[in-house]
Image (tube, rainbow, N blue to C red; front, side, top):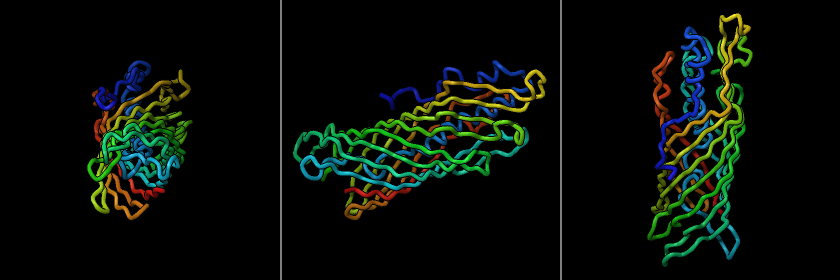
Length: 310
């Protein structure tokens, strides 16, 4: 149901709407430019941390090894996503065009074995618990402030566990926290523009299907992400009534994006080397003052991980 829902952004009140309502016409270009950078950053930083498959390299739940003793998996991984922003740190500055790497460790543990529907067809309703901890290395040289720690909790529910006769199919839901993401000088002394995404978080749904062929396996999936945060933009203004700066705040700023991804894994016994490539949907276009086509562009991301299954 989540994957079939309307996927374009539907802010109750977008930052561009607040700019048009709260600032003079002469300042709309700059205010809207920063507002669009906020929307781009929310989704691109979010997908860099979340990536595609939360159980990298597989579409099956783990199940149990012996009796009720659970199997576990540990996956060190590196994600990378691209962030392209319009010039926001100065009125005539350059665009930001930077990669955002993420270093993380994912963990999974089998909780429920699931039901066997037919011989060699099992895992229906099985459940794995998922956890992730990582660091999003935001590009400080491009105006972002340091990196942020990200953590996530969730569950993977099996539809089918992969066997000789059937592929693995599962759905996953996760909650992820990314903390605060900041760009530019908050006091707008060294730069003319600043924005912050406070308490940035994401709810993510994923559906995957995959099959192993000898030492190789392939997994494909689709997902739906809902990002939310408090958003703040601030910029230099010539209006003496504002003491030289103007601030606009939205305490309930959200966006929804579709994503699709594919994994290829090479497995030897308990070790799998996995690569992932993924796509993220762009946002609705904006045609007002300060409009940029960067808002509508789709995003790409990738992951490389080493999955250990015990």
